[in-house]
Image (cartoon, rainbow, N blue to C red; front, side):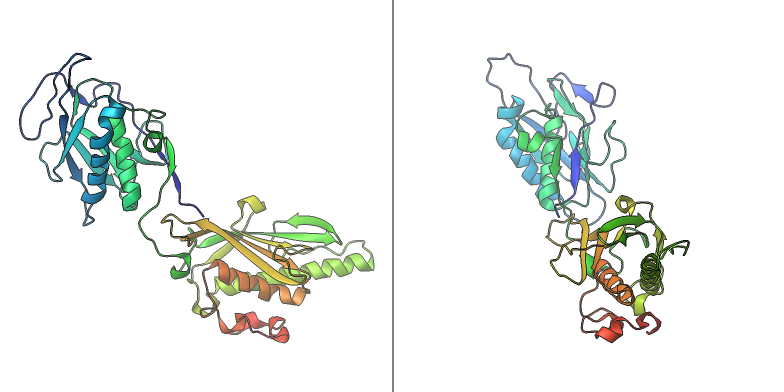
Length: 358
């Protein structure tokens, strides 16, 4: 699963938010600029860059890499040579790079990784602030700072270099615990469940109830048998969900609960019955999980969807198979599974009242 995709955006400053300096100034923490004609050789302008980063994380290395990038490329892409002096605790920097937990106000843009003023005046900015999320990896932090500094230098989305100024990119966070290392690998302790069932041979139907029953009505013996089988399956699924709602022998948090979902698209957990298994087995169960990998380490950190597929199982075995895959969805591995759900459970144990044991 790829890392989360975030927008890199800039707040377009129309006036009043960023001061512009149109004449040379002096002082250790104040930028200087000289107006020249288009054919005059230009001396590099120097910007003092400060860092505002509450906490103990050292942001200087990724910021320094971003500044070095623009020292090499500012003349090519921003039409003016630039040098930067990084003074993390500068009292009056030209540009402050502030690392923040969230960015809630960046114009009309949402879900942003960084925000900065887009400066189009030919003079040097004074007191410009660049905001960057504080939970990104060092590599992604450098990329976001490069992007936002590009706006400070007057570049907009779509301008060269595209590798830096593209409005969207894939970013990674700092290393996070994998799903198997979390007590609860879901965003919420309440999971929505949708049960999809078959209504007859090679026919399909859906029901959103967990363990829903079908009234006997006026049916043939075969219909009543199918309805009874669906009732057994529903009861078995309820046993599996109830087992985890009670803590599954201490393997999941005690506050786990389940609710019905109106559709499979809106469900956290989907249980489906199929004639053919996506895993290739003629009889048994199969499971798959979707999630997010924000730190880009190749392992999911948070689960967002669990799909359980049951193929050619008798009703009494449904609960055990559903419970086994629920454990997978909760991040359990072979050593952590409750004894009643061990993979080596016998044919009879899988069809017993396993949910009533510790």
